Length: 512
Image (cartoon, rainbow, N blue to C red; front, side, top):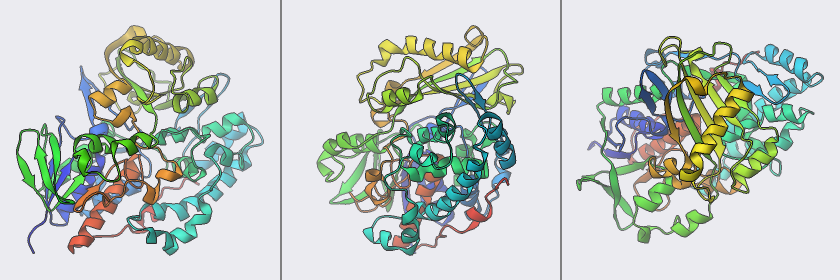
């Protein structure tokens, strides 16, 4: 059999996972990445002795990542060093601070201390949402290229657990009374770029997996996952071409035959895997006249996630008493989320996430110094916010908030290095459609078969990977998107492949 040539556009987490799997399965793999290094939004930022992750900083469900490496015959521990975080994070309100643990009894005691009388709700939460997870997660590992997928017994058994008609916030009311305790288990909706008052109840599995299997840090940052994947791709004979942007897909009839690079070179392929941001790809890598479903008019109607305002700070002091992750809630969190997701206005009292990774990992900053990473959910670029006008004042507000509400004393006066990414930068420099950092929204009308499909329905011989396709955004689900698309490709071409095993459930590190 002639070796199949697969071209992968983009060396983000989804593209690299696909490249790793397909190269191991005997395909000739060529990855084309416009940036200077791999990773996409999972790449690193390095300057003046400081190292930051560009995007994701939470690693959950590490057993999924482990399984991707195992399929290539490798142990992930030979490539990456993990630290399990305790506490999971610090959740800071104006009048209280909650530090949950991956160890259930410690979290139960923390709830009893701060929210007395609600600790039994945590037991119910873990039991009930654990059952939801067991039913739903196999559905997220399936392909939905055909509506017949909804007749699969796996889906039919899971359907009652979808929580139709309820939101995450409403669902948490089944377990807890105080609103602030509910918010401690709903802020995870930010991974989807959605409001907990709008996000479907099925995503209550997100806080569950954090408490069930913990949150890990990778030494050197989560960017090292992409670096490790690139290493595996090369070990398997695959090629990764950096600083080599793709200009467009080559299409004959309704079949993708390869890509044209920005330098004019045409690369023929048996299939193309598209790991570029979905909305950007539809507007820039495909001739609009060739699109039937995902036209510019349809993209304008699709719901998008929020965006993020990012600060990466190299700081000449340490914060040894502040945990790795902190969420600083605004005084009126619901108003803040409404401004971000509904009215598309800039909050005067934002909620912010701060990562103090140097407290865990001494490789990220010079001795006695810190890498401080700040993420602020803000409206995407469908708003009328002019970030060239608002950026400086909003940056000052965010830093003042981190010092006052977060306890990062002396932060501003000790900044040695600073990088900023605004929603305008996400769109202009990182080619993220409308600056929507978490991709398409995850409402029911854009999930499963209603999301752009893994085997892309617009063209033959084209597959999608990444947050814009099924199962959605977030590192574990992006890895799964790559496996679904890779398996789909191999099935079509008669190549061997492995379906998801029960390893994930067997190897969950449940902290009892």
